[in-house]
Length: 207
Image (tube, rainbow, N blue to C red; front, top):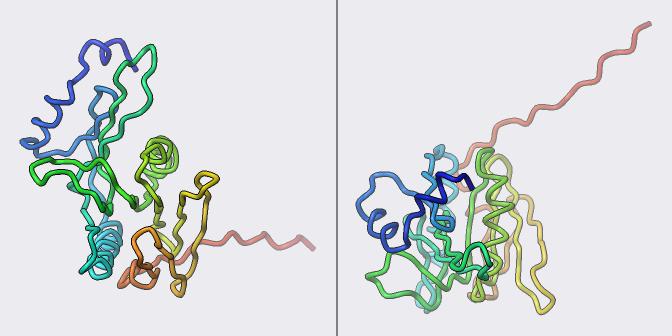
């Protein structure tokens, strides 16, 4: 964090009020705001497919899905440098079984969090965000969805901590016993066009 940022930290209250008026979404990390960039159509299609499928699976159940306009609030352990360590992120999707009041603009107790990976966000989604998300006591599983191939990595809570699971191919099913449902990769990637992956050819040997 730069000296300038230290002098201009934004309060949680000002951040939440400002987000309701701002035409650009910002994520909040310990008092510093970070503007969010747009996404490609493939990214948005995958996120929409995932949320649409979750909506169908969750009908009649107590849990509900929320889209990328809903923030998740994370309260990290305090430190000597930062007595209040609060973050707000906009995941691509989430499922909540114990929702905040409908007047709030964020959720505190997600059971499922979803991020669709891009080249720009991969390091953040697999690093800083993952580390923060996995501290949420209510979280059962964090899904990282690839954009360029049918593959999903799940970080799932077990009695021994979070374990990493990999699901590949359109025939794969992701069990979500935390909500009593499952999610298929065929539904996640419906109508998504995958670009042919480049392969490196070896140079022919000289005679």
